[in-house]
Length: 261
Ligand code: NAP
Image (cartoon, rainbow, N blue to C red; front, side):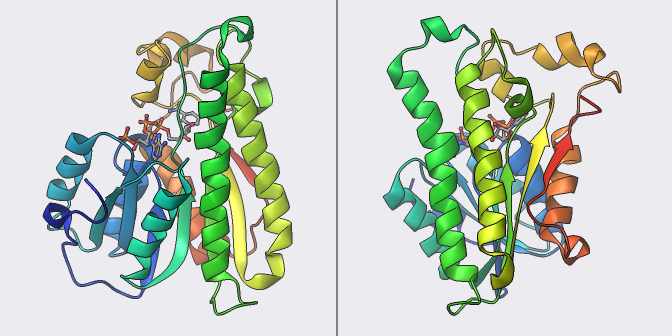
């Protein structure tokens, strides 16, 4: 399925402000999309391979106030990133970008990781995010023809912990996300663009199954100071606040959403 598929056409006529959410058809990204659509926003959500989840979300939101277009695209592929933004350009002006797409490989020790795993982790979690940031800035900057906007990068508390014995490669990729967020926020602060990161802790999504530990949030939730894991919607609430004008003086922030951990 390529962008935007005929059977996944927008459910309503587009408005002028467009939000892009990468990895927006499952987990945290899906929760962000649901909030934005409920607000009546025009949203482009990308995903990489799970057509079933994407189709189900489009069907579920068919009668919602906003409009949803889904685009199959690998954010590690530059041409695919350009397709995501081209789909958004057709609908209006991109003012919100949530760089949420990310992946994790099975838990292990660095000594056992091969180059392909490390390269794929960096390609999706870092290169893909940087390419999406680049396309966002090109459209939003008041130094060119843009009218400003808000970029939210989805990092992880793993960036602080380093995830020893779990996934150091993933943690390192999220450290890069934090650094890029700080740098870009400063670079474009006078161009009408705010750039922030959220750093989720232990959140109940399918990503833990990809890490080979589907029950992770239930096994480890008690170790979180608040005594429980978080939900995708709790992260989404923070992300949509960062997209909104309610956070108009917040940029370059790395906001932990981890229940105190
Ligand atoms: P998830 O439920 O596994 O969903 C991941 C989403 O990203 C899916 O829509 C997936 O598409 C998409 N995706 C994966 N690789 C992609 C690629 N190469 N190109 C485009 N899209 C891609 O994961 P999640 O837990 O919601 O995670 C979302 C973000 O939060 C990630 O950046 C993750 O690192 C971060 N995070 C999560 C947690 C947590 O505990 N859940 C904690 C800290 C940070 P398909 O549906 O097609 O597979």
